[in-house]
Length: 125
View 1: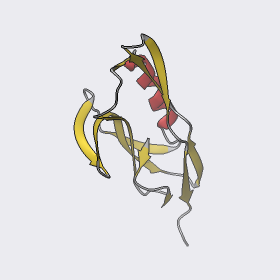
View 2: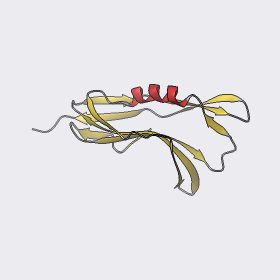
View 3: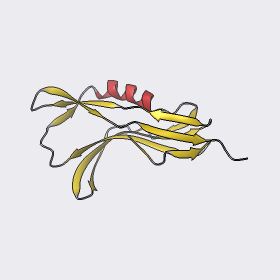
């Protein structure tokens, strides 16, 4: 889970995306596991309460190659939206879990995100 900022004023935009990064040199062969079921649960946990939401409506999993540092990754973007909170407060996107199927070991592997705290400040007088 990534956000473009963790502190903003009421009414300002915050962009949130949910993606999985797989290093190109990773030794595992992973497949998505019951993605639609998982995504509906994950998206509910991402949504910022009392906010206007503009969902980017990704019709399919967006795949792209990126470089972070000197390492190459395949990024699978599942969800992206902009939120415009209407009330001040602290909001937390909790730890999110994504289950993937490890084809080589024939088991389910769980990947977890870090929680993200977002502080929405009241507008100044």
